[in-house]
Image (cartoon, rainbow, N blue to C red; front, side):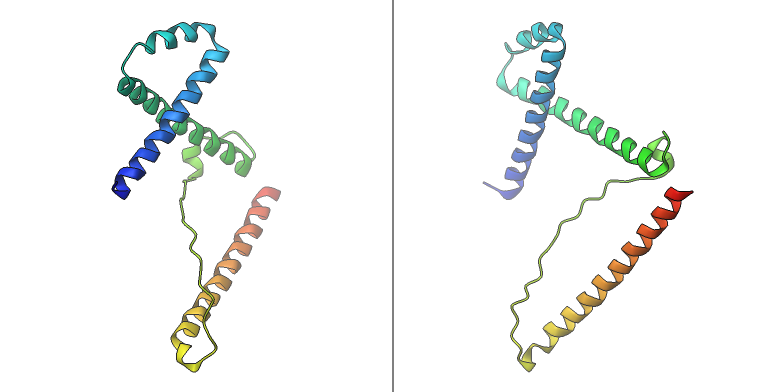
Length: 141
């Protein structure tokens, strides 16, 4: 199986599960939804999974919007629209650094890279500290 196909399959499974969970919660909260969902069970498996995946995508978007608005309220201390704050969702992937180098002089390029990484980490730490202090100043105002 191709990696891309596996990734799409896992993503679709995630959305189907999210949609099914959302439907289950609706059924528990609203008994009229129970009849509607029972009628849907007569459809084919593909139609049901497609509908649940679409519902999962919608549910995820609503949840992200809710969390973004909540964060905006916490940052500003008031209820504001998320677009006025300018918050965005950032996705990053952490990578590890292999630190198993020997202490030979033949490893000078590795030591130079590690030194530059240490400098970058120190710079990022300083930026983080300044952002924290700026956030504290904004909260106190």
